Amino acid sequence: MWAGKGYGYGKGGYGYGYDMMWNPMMMQMMMGYGKGQGKSGLITFPNDKKVFIGGLPLTTAPDIELNKRLKEHMTQAGACLFAEVGRSAKGGAAFKTREEVQKAVEMLNGSEFEGSKLQVETWGRKPAGNGGAAGAAATSA
Image (cartoon, rainbow, N blue to C red; front, top):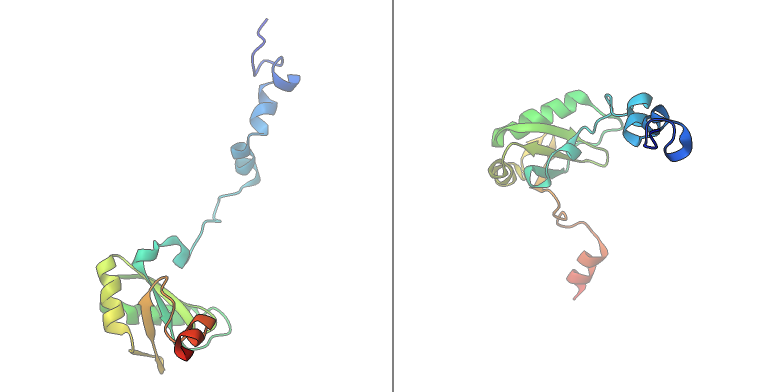
């Protein structure tokens, strides 16, 4: 007699089908996870190929057309792959290369878009004049 896994005599005695069914990967496949639920947006791009954009027009809901116009505006600096206007007048854009990111910061910081003056910085840097406690402490010292 076989006393191995998969023939009804192994762990739990339920056989091969039971072991396969409770495998986490098999459960995801059975439940349909991972189909069309992938990440999208700026999160999918590496941080060194993204820019932060402040000073954007305020929006109450996602506006695909505004995102397209922002992408077109950012393309002046190079191959802009994705641009997004978020809530709170902030957003971001992703570029193909790091050089294009630097060019976008130099070229488009202070540019006008939809009647607003843009603040373009490399991704991850704190925006100047953010009004935080560190900024207040630095100015009072």
